[in-house]
Length: 585
Image (tube, rainbow, N blue to C red; front, top):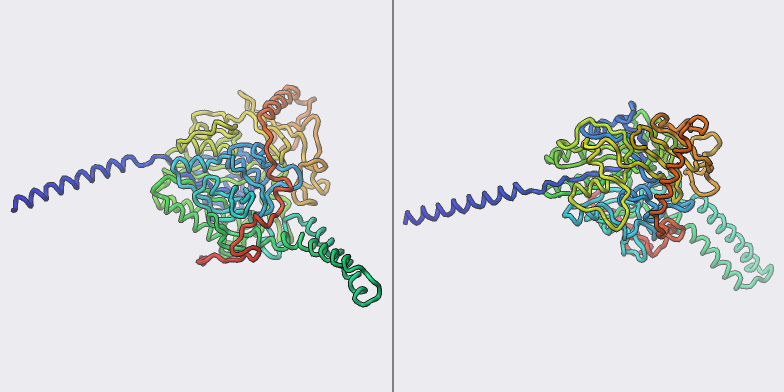
């Protein structure tokens, strides 16, 4: 009997040993691919960050990413505004290729109930990572559309562009979300429709009161017809515009609206919590998290822990709050022991908005030494943004790269690191940054970069081979107003369609390696290579345009106007109202 027990004990020990060996083998074969945390701030100027030269706004956590990683000093957005820049970032392609370039006044998506957005036939890097078993999530701003034909088709929604999880704003943060801050959406048209409805209403009363008093006869048919006209005129501005906070200022969790309208006071903490939770629950598998900050777009937040703490008013307070949030995310990565396995990336979607200011001071960002800002076409201040990569153990700390790079480069960089393949059925304009960041090559693959303002080619950057020069030719420039100003203060945001720009023939030519502020254009008389440079640039433009194909314009009037049947809604439309539960911070 004792022998039998010993034999069973021996067999149990052997079985336990074999199980342990198999477990160790499995542990040795854990997925070696990196995690990705991509952090994009909204409207942040390159001059707002300490490691890019700001010595008054405190950004120690962002600066630390640069100290422990790679800083790109010539990192370029593919558009000077949110929607086109983000479309290019997600797809690795110039926005004109996906129809996300503007043809006129409306340069971004204006309503969650619009039909325009990132087309479903575009491939995002999230889609490829998802197919390669990455857990993919986005927390924060989307601004690339929601629906196409019906309220719940979600054709432009993040879940149909490669994201397993979405928590945030399908639209963006804008002044209408905060009562008392004014309106950002077609304010002049709102006023026109309101005045027209008032005039029609007055005309109706002018006919109705005498008719009821018996002073003179007026056809009741005419009064009914005019009444219907007044109601239609009133609804045409009141429903889409006066109720826009209810339509646009919403929070979605995956495909469900969970708060409408949203509560701004608790929004930053809720977004931060969601980002931290996503990292924690996916720590055992490869993940990709896109943290799309709603800071520092207006209206600015008034978080009590940061108000009055910076030297640059409320805007500076918001930048320092972003920095604190970046620190929180970095701390989670380190606490979970994921630092060496996680590539972190920090950037902005475009330059700061210079025209944003009120009696309280400047509400937009600072773009350092660079001319222009948000919405100003190809001027450097609107498209040169921070670009920082941190990946301990892989990227050398404190590295600085001055070569031209693009936000579109993130697409091939992440796809290649994840073991995926770039789409072969379309042109990808971005290039893998790893050879450059690891020091295996010294030159950027971007010999030419094309700077669009809407669908219009505004400028071209040329970095000749075997040369340190970086030439940039502007074919037109936006008309600043009032005269002598450094932005479009009269219309609040610059436009690039006819009547709002000044064409240049020959183009304005700058050498950014000597004149990064674009102050002094080169002239044919002073630059002996002027004609040769322009011939080379014109040749590149011709080749580039031959690669373009016609696609539907996602930002046409028909696609951006509010359509009630597409409006995301919690409850029964039009009585959309709900508050997210458990929002206490």
